Image (cartoon, rainbow, N blue to C red; front, side, top):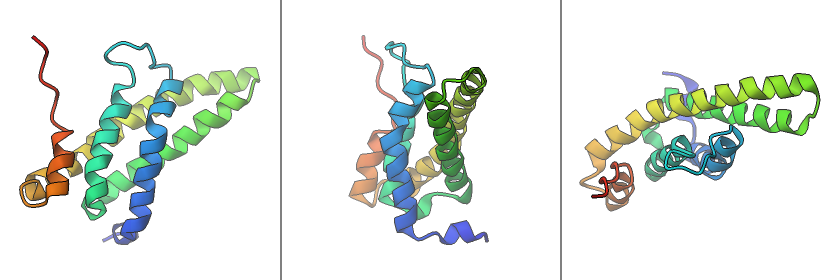
Amino acid sequence: MSAKRFLPPLLLASLVIVQLARAPAALAQSGDDGGGPGANAPARVLKRVLAVLQVDPAAASDACVSALEELHKTQGIVTNDESDSSNSAKQELAVARDVLESDYDDTNEICGADARTLCRTKGNTLPKVAAACQALLPAAPSP
């Protein structure tokens, strides 16, 4: 078993909190801020996924922790490239934004699986988990 599996829950919780705080801003920076119904959708999904995992940080797999770390690293690159006005930084920023979007998708998939597992296994027994899991359910379509 890897050393990441033994991360203190407080450390994982802090990673989760950082991602919750930065998710909407970082995705808006990636250009997906059209304001329509799909704007910032990956960030909103990630917020709900991380809210579930924050209830029981030990439920996050090594792969989820790694995906969060990679997302955080890419967010830093986007932020740094945005502050650099050179032409090469502008080109790198476009690539970094694409990578950021991909990182959101990967993180949602990996951590989402952990969150759904937690919902299946503890959603009926722990009220905090049940409440967070309700936010994962897709919204009912409007008539």
